[in-house]
Image (cartoon, rainbow, N blue to C red; front, side, top):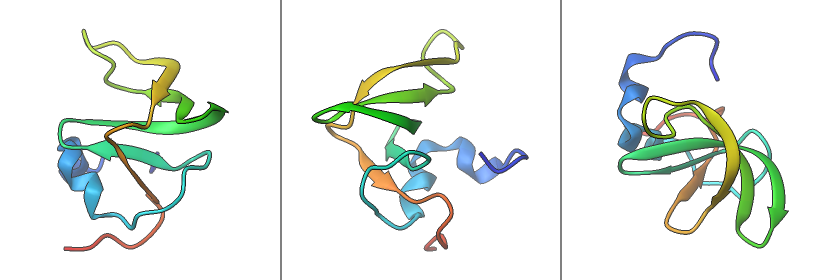
Length: 80
């Protein structure tokens, strides 16, 4: 996402420091324990998502629900 590893963002909860926003391509869905990048809206709360830690150390693009996630703008200023 940033062209380099940002060590403090290895902890999913730290993504919640970015400003909240509406779902859109390029935004990030985050909660304590998991993060994924929104790629394309499918329907309702379902999005095609780039999921870099999809379980079993797999990276994949698949349909994900936003239920239980906060959508944040990774390009906005992080709060402390």
